[in-house]
Image 1: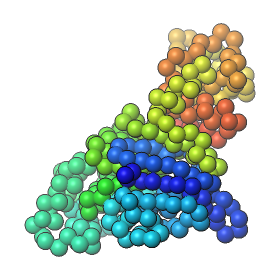
Image 2 (image 1 turned 120 degrees about the horizontal axis):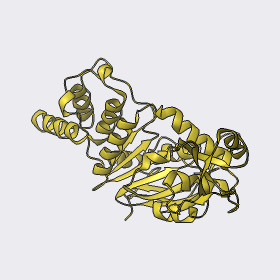
Image 3 (image 1 turned 135 degrees about the horizontal axis):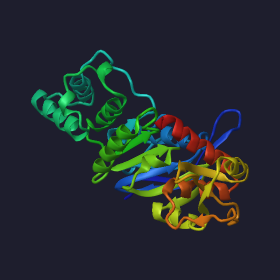
Image 4 (image 1 turned 180 degrees about the vertical axis):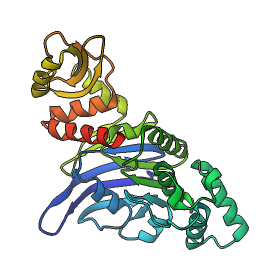
Amino acid sequence: MAAIDVKHLSHTYRGGFKALDDINLSFDAGVFGLLGPNGAGKSTLMRILCTLLEPTEGEVSVCGHDVMEDPMAVRSQLGYLPQEFGAWRSHRVEEVLDTLAQLSGMLDKPSRRQTVGEVLEAVGLGDVADRKVKKLSGGMLRRLGIAQTLIHGPKVIIVDEPTVGLDPEERIRFRNVLTNLGRDRTILLSTHIVADLGGACKAVALLDNGQIIFQGSPAELVQGAIGQVFQLSVSETELDDLEAKYDLVSTSIGSGSLVVRGISHEDELPPNAEVVEEPSLEESYMAFMAARGRSGAARQDEEHTDTEVA
């Protein structure tokens, strides 16, 4: 039985806007990525999975429990980290988890303290258990968010846009935490930042305009982009012309020139360009979206990524 099972899910908001259109997804143990531009429908799907929103059509179950018929059973098996997690500012880290553990029904104090300590160690916060939440770095705060999802021992963890505002080192540390946790749990990571998925992602689903447009392994997504990603050395003047014709992924300084990587249009490479034999997952995502006529959306997401990392 799949940990998360979605069949023919659709959701239409008041006013007629259809946020999800006949979604079919299935996830077992491991880390899974849900990718898509802003407004693709990711947050609507997350809210339905977390029993915060009832779908208008279809069936959704978590660990065998229907989200509409038995929402409390779903919540007992599920941990959720929303985009914003910043409450409890005046509490110590350990106090936050201890309070949440009590609210989840863990009333035996010795057992509860042991669980709190184990969870803090699992997310790399054991050394700051006595620190107040307001003194945590952005990365520590996100890891505390993961800790609060774990305190009641859920089998499924849902994480929504987890690394906004984190520096590169904290993003890597956060991804490593999710990788370790995904060994015996199902982790669904919803993001528009492709690099969030890391190398441990078992499968990826791309959501656009409320529909699943790709579902498969990261390797399959990369394979489909081979021949569409190019690399080229140009001058600053040539760079302006290139930007007007192609979706550029990155620009770096080479020996006396700029080295550009970009996405070709209908396999038409710029003059003197070389095909990149092993495109990255980010480049593959952009190539896929560009092939669908969504290059603007894909490029916007990558620019947003750069802004967040900076």
